[in-house]
Length: 168
Image (cartoon, rainbow, N blue to C red; front, side):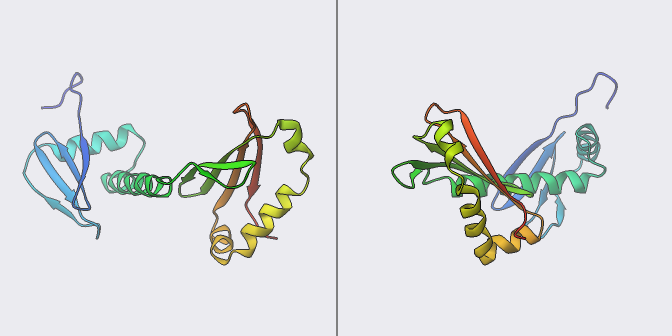
């Protein structure tokens, strides 16, 4: 029974590509096709609904979709970062790539000072030209994605951010 002192709890995990939601003894599996299968009966509906409301979701389905997407995003980020850091040239190393729904961020470390980065007036135009000439990246931009290029100076401080959000 839930009362004012009860703390609903949910545990989310992935098993064979399915999102598992386990709470109060009931487990539900959301398959890759989006169907939800009941495993056992209990108070899981209440727990998931309360948890969903607690983090600002309107429905359980919305919460489950968010969690499934978040798990997929984390998996993609692990995959694209598995071979990083990677030296690009004598001045620059690609440290990390962060992908989410609305943006992709490339983070670089350089052996340059902030003053040297500020002197480079061609970097932004060059990056924009490279991004916009790539058909796949340009398509993503037309669909609302933004690319960020973050450059840290040789002391590890953020020296410059170049944003590409349109190709016009």
